[in-house]
Amino acid sequence: MKKEVIKNIELNSYWKWEESLSPELCDILLKERNSFEELKAVINGGIESQGVLNVNKRKSNVCWAPVNHWIEGILYNYGLYATQEAGWNFQLGRPEQIQLTAYDKDGFYGWHEDWAPFALGPSIRKVSVIALLSDPSEFEGGEFQFQEDVNIEMKRGTVIAFPSFLRHQVTPVTSGKRYSAVCWINGPRIF
Image (cartoon, rainbow, N blue to C red; front, top):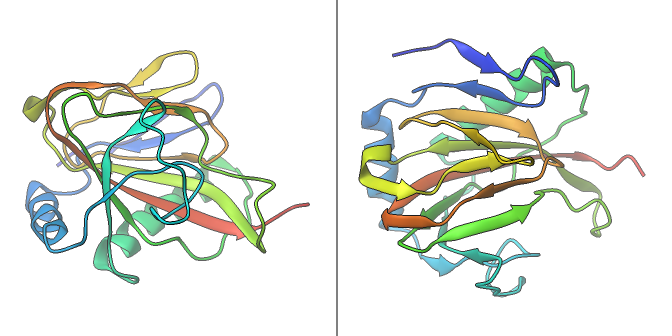
């Protein structure tokens, strides 16, 4: 298993660990996902009843892992490590509940940022951490991209961490099914 970290040197804008989750851990999480309630993904809200269903912007299904689920600790630690090593200097608190996302054929999530600086509440999303749970041979399309159409190649078990204000997207899946786990680490708002 490759443990070397890959980072964007010019901007130090993201950190990537290839195949950091073993295939066995990915399989366990996908099996557990089957026991969670699946909902249509929304925008501008964490759960279906609070957000807006907009299939022109996002088309996927999500499940929410229970609070303090084992995957939360793993992804949270990758986010903390990236924040410290990258010098982002974010003051961080707890992560949000882990989102397990499924993109079927034609599923996608258009350009967006994960943070909402003007949302109500004492904290905002500061670091996003994503793990690819599917093997890329199981789907086509579904590429993870940053602004400027920078493709981030991800293998099964790859983890990527980046500041939540960076624009990113998942391109449409043209065949198969793509699964991922998403962790957002919150921190106190700065204004």
